[in-house]
Length: 293
Image (cartoon, rainbow, N blue to C red):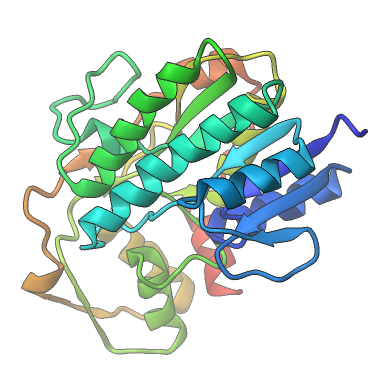
């Protein structure tokens, strides 16, 4: 049996699409789990269904697992669903691996959002998480649950900070902004445009994921970030230069989040001590990619 058998949960999501293509190009044997898919080598499965998930794990016996499946939209109001998928679905995966593929190595995609409210200019892994919304709490709970499997499995917990790229849902603010410019809209409704986030390229993120999983790194929690923070005001300025015109911003209270985090920028010091630094794309390069899609 091949030693390059990879399973990706959430394979047809934004990150999964990019990761699958990259791994196939590198010669890996790639299998996937998706809620609705009937594509070859993609298995239809709800990760909340332990028996169905276990059968897939038992049949494939993957060497590596990228766990990307989950509810990723911070504004999602289905709190019960968020925890059922992000926490208990992840526990189902870890338990199935423990029973049926104990030699597999797994990367769990958490989030930089677990740091929540903070007064640090750069957040490193020594900062105590302080999640302030259901999404971030579900990811932090997943991390804590995963630690129970450190003695039985080889686990890497990745905390990606905000990232963007082609195929991202328009529920997210950057695809929304780019779409408005592509369509020549004169105005756009947004919330707070002064909050600062990293907007890394999805290609940088998946390269970090691969390097973390395929190296001899076990039972670590690692930020996936570049220490570069941008406001939506910065994004709008760059997009106006790319598109050749300025758009009017209308602030809509319904897009204002309570306790919105003013700055969420991570330190990649630990990341780059563990892996070779991948290419870091400029924000303009990434926005142009999406605009020209």
